[in-house]
Image (cartoon, rainbow, N blue to C red):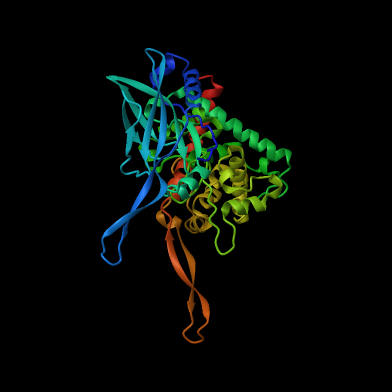
Length: 440
């Protein structure tokens, strides 16, 4: 078996009442350290394929192949706070993972384990009992498989591409106002650090000539974006504040590793959810930004770059700069006067593409819609635009391959929610700043 390289992630998992009883961060560090030496191995099996006689149509033997991967491990560090004792609990999760039916077996006897939610690293939550006593899961150790290999059973392929993370997903028991503030301070500090690096390299803004990139965008715009990209739409409608706070709590627990392995259904990756879906020789979004801002020394590799927080902050800022540059002078004037209102335009491009962003601009110009922070709710028409799809067909007259274009009406349903979250987060960020400045 090939040696699998280890990359540790730090998440925490504990009920809110524990905060007042003990130094939970110290306990989490102990849980992490306890898990580090535990080996992780795939469970495998040989495939037995019957050999059928062509003449008699009967089985005349069997052909063995493989091995193939049938399960992957999870090791939980469960803490008994009464006894101040940790218990390592190993599970084997059926592979490939079926999110609708998360199937696993408990390898370590003497415990009852309940799968609460999630099916990927960073989202999984478990409850653990020893007899009638509920234990607290403070850390877990998981295999992380690249999304494109999540269904394969090829052992050699998986061993060569698998990473390991020590982590905990957020749950309601994790809530702490103090940790919201800690997450805010950490994330703000990382953004300030990234801005400082870009400023030291004298990276020039494409959207605002004469300005350095780090001076062209306020740091709280990137803070807004960093929270927004990880906020669940449905949770936002249920409890906006709590949803935003969950993100910052996750930052407090995981620091630079928070959301580094986040992957959307559209294969958007990392903290700032970048895609890189190039076509017909054209580079994808990630590669386009890297090429456009060569002097920023962004990480070339998409996979590595989306797992690096500092790189993600810088490349997100560069993309916002590129998107803002596509708008006419009146948007730039609004940005200089009231950047929080004008930010809807580059953010709409960032989230839904500039067909969405420019369509929103034209609709606002046409209807003279008043952009407000507290009640931003344009109609669906604002996010409706026409795009053209090309396809290649054989000409009936000449027999040659020709390109045809078809107009397609697009109604973007995601970006309206995205911008509502952005507008909400301005006030949320201001409130956090006031709390910290007031010593609350």
